[in-house]
Image (cartoon, rainbow, N blue to C red; front, side):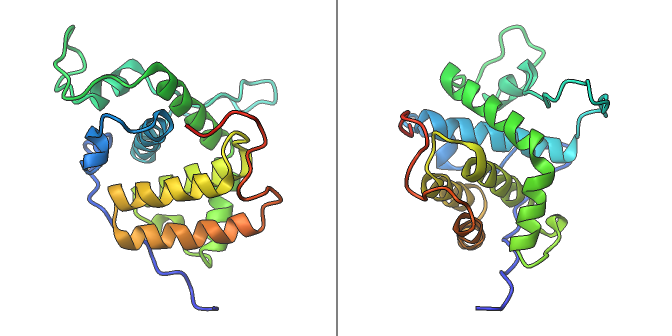
Length: 205
């Protein structure tokens, strides 16, 4: 079909409080997989960066390429603590597991490092819709999934797509899930990777 992909469903956003994503049962589900938890945290932080981008860094050839990393305040706020400056804030949910946190940080670093390429692909395969027309949550779910399709060798592309669809449905809308599915499937079709095979032996958690 030649008709353009419809714009993704919008979600409430708040520049004054960019760490807050719409609350859903997924955020409180205790048995969610470590990687799902890591993806959720990564999307929250990427969402935050859309509203509060980091200060410009040294762009010289010898400068380090590492991007922003979620800090202690981010992790405290993510637990639901009202004031991250409290010595013993009362969280509304358990802190993220260390493996999930490490996975989230690796995703943030990967998306940040490749963000120009990811944004170009999303724009091209969405029939040149501007990124600014996408809801902030949808935009960052897409960035994360495209990064995994292209660069996360431990996760088969179809797993990355399925995770993105579920996250879009949970945090945005059913319409967003369909939009994410169609766009990512187009990108996956041009990827040289096998859609159902990881390139490393570690299974998806």
